[in-house]
Image 1 (spheres, one colour):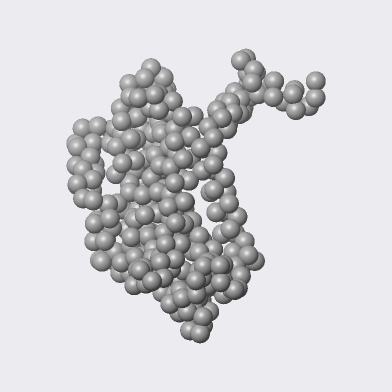
Image 2 (cartoon, rainbow, N blue to C red):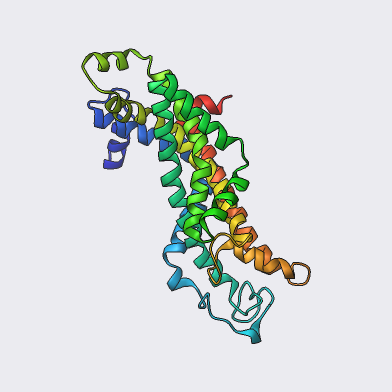
Length: 304
């Protein structure tokens, strides 16, 4: 047997010899299941391509995304030296799309760090402690859930001021309640388990039980939810940018590019359509990836 076949047999064994072996085996079998989902792999490759484009933006962008040339304004698609045309100020649309991918990933990354962690903390504390703590935290969560996400984000940005950092904070403040609900539901199921009772008898405190034994069991459900929520987060960020409350000019944020191009939608449709297609493609990729992760990490939910 070759080394690859030996490693594959070792990872696919039904009798792991250690905890590390069991974890590696579970990861590998999950990857095989995920790889069998063609659409999920398409979404994964699109996002990998987006990461590569964002990382290599200074090297692959054909023009300076901020350089204006009024003599070349509103050039059509496939024009000389401007593959996707130019906007109303003569800036190259392709270059602005490439640099705009950095802003999209920046927003998605920060929201994905802030909102799930906040929701996980609130949900697990509410579910484990119970009583009046649960009632207070869940009523606060219900208040946030009662408002449409974009409307609530608009209210926060109006209070905090326009800007990409405030937009990220506003989106995070509106995105955490669903994660809190999921974490609370998982915690209510876990806290009555026998091994939690055994840990309590050993003298473990509430915070240790929550962080060391409950959080790890909630992570898989949250990962699926985060991935599926990325499309909504991108659309919320683009909506704020479209309204002038997100990234400020001359930043090449995709929503702001659509806002600028809407004035020319009838005669020069590509100015608004091209960034719109970029938002659509990335949002679709996150949805496809989320569906694939749900099948691997939460198979019971995918069968419903």
